[in-house]
Length: 172
Image (tube, rainbow, N blue to C red; front, side, top):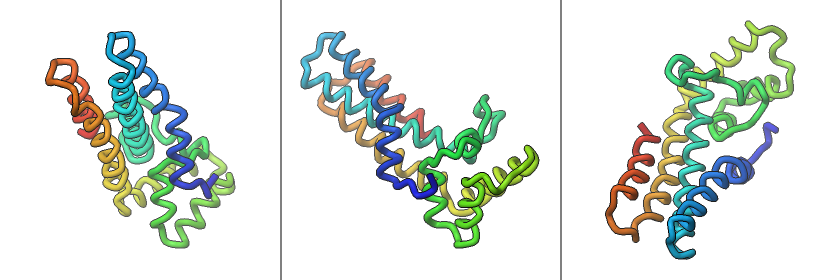
């Protein structure tokens, strides 16, 4: 859906990755014996971390290198799934590129694997040209800040340090 909004994209990844991570962090805290109010903070941490993780994963799917990622890339594009990097590219692209994106997403752009690779390379080039990775990293960074803030009331500990280190690792 080339008309997908950012808000609806965030809802989708909220239902998907963020709810899993948020629920896991919340349940883990409860099982660890913290109060429900404190466990809710871990839920916020997990949900915020999950949103950031999915945004950065979607970005790598568009502009990453398969050798570095260790997995096939371009799957979101191949499946016609709009992600934040593609939404941003759509919104900042010139009318010609926007029209071409619409063609590709409607299945009218490629007929062979070679054409699909060519389209993927073109979109990747345009994404880099339009600074899509930097934009997505900023958005993910805001969610990671919220994740870190959720842990702020907790005393320093190796467990807290590990969770905070995850947020730093994610943006490297």
